[in-house]
Every structure is written in structure tokens, then in C-alpha cells.
Image 1: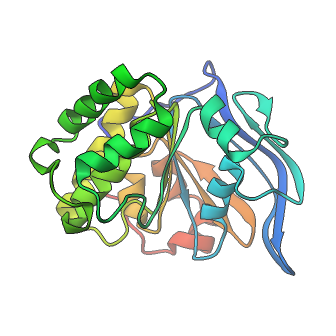
Image 2: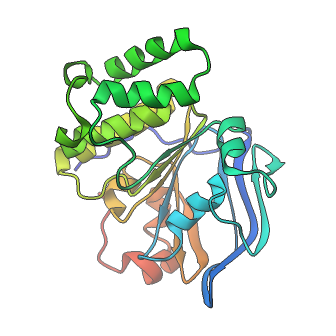
Amino acid sequence: MGIIKKFRIKSFKNLNTIIEFNNITLSYGNRLILDDISFKINEGQIFGMLGPNGVGKSTIFNLITGLVTPRSGTIKIAGEDVSSFPIYLRTKKFKIGYVPQYGGYFNDLTLFDNLRAISEVVIDNSNKRLERINYLLSKFELENLKDIKAKLLSGGQKKKLVIALSLLSEPKLLLLDECFAALDVLTIKMLQEIIVNLQQENKITICICDHQARDLLACVDVAMILSNGKVIAKDTPSNLVKNINAKNAYFGDNFKFN
């Protein structure tokens, strides 16, 4: 597959940091998941996370949203320490959208009714709900599917629906958990284009974690490798695949990006 991203933002020095992890450590029982890690995600960036199963990629999303609490360290969102912020306040105050790997929709509701149900939760102004729904139906070319029950949609259509649901609240930060998993090649390409367009057209900061290294690297500006609870490497895709630590921990010697 060819490179999806037509350009990559080389420098974010003049932009604000939207996510900042400072010396975060987290354990589940006796198992150490994250070991004193620190990193930043800058505003407007498409940021990727790669690493073996169980390395803590989804856990980082849970830390951002407040679903879990670190043993030590601080997390800042838009420059503000969010240690004492509950889930609902973080997502609303900092406008965070989340696309889970599985589910994220109501099986027995139609596509339109899924959007309507979530819009009633996240959009206070009732007059704006239908306007936002119609915008997203058009943006993702879902108008012809709006009366189909979600459980009858294809994998790609379901992924479009879940992304549309996450965008109802007009988030500034979008978290995509294993978004390329179990999708065919054409659907992955469609999803990559959606991600890049969201950055370019809507100025959304996007964070993706996935096992599909080539698919992720094709659409991110910066990616980091996690291994054994540590950040092994963090760089642009072209530099990351040449990094000796990234090769030893994740890519191996034979991985080719393009």
C-alpha cells in the first residue's frame, strides 16, 4: 500500500502540548505495566503508539480518559494537571473523543438512532443535534445506511459509525484504539484517509495505537515504541524504522516501511 499521508508536520515547536505524561508508573497487582514513562503529544499532531501485546498502549488511553489512575507521576491535558478530574469532566472540559477497538455502538438501533441517542447526551442544544448528525452522515457517506441496524453493517461501516459517534461532541483530541484491526485492505485505506482528513480539515489531534505497524506509520506524523514498560524510541516514521532500539524491541531487521 502506498503512503497515505501527503505531508508530515516536521516540527511542532511553536504549537501547544495537548497531552503530557511525566514520570508515569502503573501496575496491575504485581505486574508493572508502565515504568516511569514521559512523553508529549502536540496539538494538531497525528501520534502513533506501537508495541507488543500487553505493553500498555490501551492503558495509556485509559490514563488519559481517567479510567485508571497511575501509581505515580502526573498527566497534563492542555497544560492542566488532571489527576483529580473524573472521567466525565476530562472528556467534556478537554473535548476528548474515544473510538474503542470493539463495539462502541448499540447493536439493535439503526445507524441514525445511534447518532441521535449519543447526540442527546453530548449536545445540549437540541436544535444543533440534527444539524450535527446530518453533517456527519454526509461527511462519512452514511446517508443511504441511516435506517440499517448497526449489527447488520459491514466492518468498515461500523468503524465509520463509531468514529462519527465520537465526533458528535466536536472533540479536539481523538483516541483510536486498534482501529485497523480485522479490517480488509480497502477499508484500512479508507480509514487512513479519514484520519488524515480529520487532521487537515477539522484540526483534530489524533492518537492511534495499533499492531498494524505499516498501516499506522502511513498516516502518523510521529510514533513511539513501547516495550517492557518503557518508551524505547519516538520519532517520525522514516526515522523510527531506522532506530536501532526500535528495531531490536519491535521491528526486527527485515521490516520495510515502503
